[in-house]
Amino acid sequence: NRDREGDKDRNRDGDGDGDGDGLRLESIKSQILSKLRLKEAPNITREVVNQLLPKAPPLQQILDLHDFQGDSLQHDEYLEEDEYHATTETVISMAQETDPVVQIEGNPHCCFFNFSPKIMFTKVVKAQLWVYLRPVQHTSTVYLQILRLKPVTEEGSRHIRIRSLKIDLNSRIGHWQSIDFKHVLQNWFKQPQNNWGIEINAFDPNGNDLAVTSLGPGAEGLHPFMELRVLESNKRSRRNLGLDCDEHSTESRCCRYPLTVDFEAFGWDWIIAPKRYKANYCSGQCEYMFMQKYPHTHLVQQANPRGSAGPCCTPTKMSPINMLYFNDKQQIIYGKIPGMVVDRCGCS
Image 1 (cartoon, helix red, strand yellow):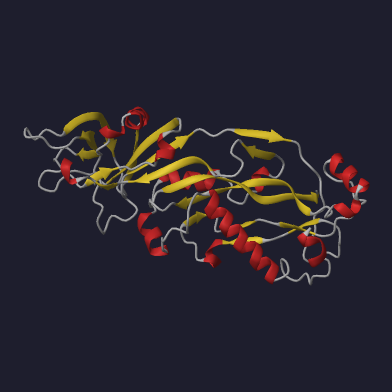
Image 2: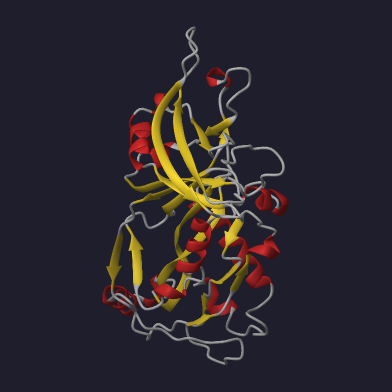
């Protein structure tokens, strides 16, 4: 009932009523952090984003193939089984430095991949390791091998070969090579104690290692990373109709109004995409005589009008937004955040 009286005489300039929009945006920020299970916004600056963001095909495919405005679902309502928390679809885990117990004289530095317990309990649909190979001047045959690391013993053995590929390279601008890693990852998730990381080599006929595995300066955006897809389920429900208004509308009844959320204006550089989206909000009057969403509510209010606070103008249909973002572990996550776009408003 809070919007019913206060917004009745509001001055509709811009996308809303200034102070009211500020409160709405703060509420949306809190919802996003809560639904992503983050206590606070990750401390990731634009410089860190530019350093960590892989210059690689999977990210561009995500940006090209998926809608980041929430508009693709405007004709269908999706209700998640978990209707509150974000459902992860794709995780991109960046390579980290290996534990010293697997190193001999400080090598190999790369690559360890860390996964949260939440991800480890999901069903893996697809997992690919992406490795950047340095450019070659002439067509060359490259032998790429991946070794599973183990703590160093007295015998010094720490290598177990898990993948070996023969690649014909003719790229003078470098090449991103993907390797199917689903079975390895499934084993790691079942027995995490075996995940000490991997060593990646890609030797040309002259013995040069073309795989970029250095985690230091000069290799920004070219570090190895793991692309992981996990299962998601949806439920559908029926649509409800409602009024749509804009900033120039004189409509006093319950209506949906535009509201744009701008993450760059928040200083939230940790969100890769979208940079902004249309969240919308509900505002307007709900009369007692207005038939409610649920007949029971309407009948109760008719029987005892003084004992009821009255119907409120609230969202009756909401949809998720797709988001690509860094979490607090500097991992890139792609997923849906449910209930972030108001599609319909009504009295209830």
